[in-house]
Length: 188
Image 1 (cartoon, rainbow, N blue to C red):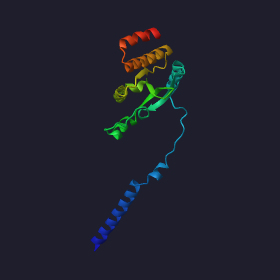
Image 2: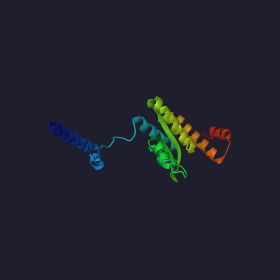
Image 3: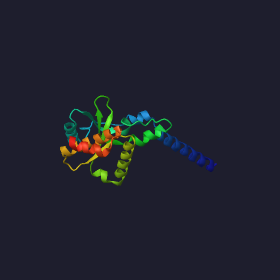
Image 4: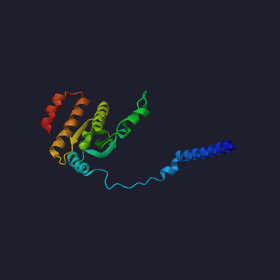
């Protein structure tokens, strides 16, 4: 008889522990989400990015819109017929570029820009940067990177942007890149 009472107590304790564990594990998403607290950031860019943004604004004048902190799904079509577009989306979902230049007329992305700080020297970032470069190259969206050493040179930024845009234009027109570079040197 003592064994029955003991085993009954053990089973009741086990059932109670199981019920507590299940209720903790299956908390409704609504109650969990309501516990999050958010605050507005003081700025959407770091000081270096804001400084670079101001230089970009000066360099491109009113020729292009400049969008900061753009995630790749915003500028790339991941819904390709015959492909696992959910997988394609997940592959680019957490990747972004620091700036994107877009045409005024139709907001078409024409150039992606990365501002590389010391974090881009880590192995994981190097791999991520290579993958972003591969993806954008495949999508035929030029990407240029600038090192962030705290000081930016307006003339260098202007030259590299113009060079990238001219090279892209020449490729789209099927022109010889060598001749386009000669033209670029004479124009700029």
